[in-house]
Image (cartoon, rainbow, N blue to C red):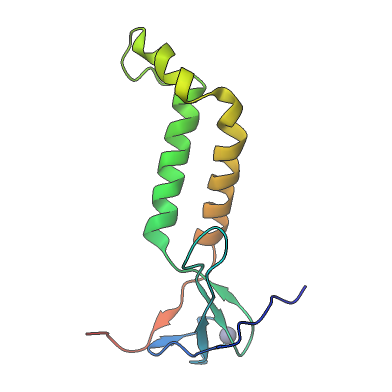
Length: 119
Ligand SMILES: [Zn+2]
């Protein structure tokens, strides 16, 4: 499957591809999930990751939400935990899993190399 090209495939300065070492790295256009989905090498087509910190945050929060919704981690240790699970329904756990899976997939992508330091 070929990903849809954005009309303005502008090369991002200061980045290079970790696979083919070319400097034609374009920022991917915003999608429905994130305004900054990462980069793509215009030479070999490798998808490169963007906001690592955000994905790490999603993974941490997602795991925490699953632990709390499943009742694995009693945060308060009293009846407030049950009230919390009223908000964080176990039925939402698949959604957290999807978010985590997406974030993990993005984090596992190679990251673009910096070829020059930005001011
Ligand atoms: Zn490449």
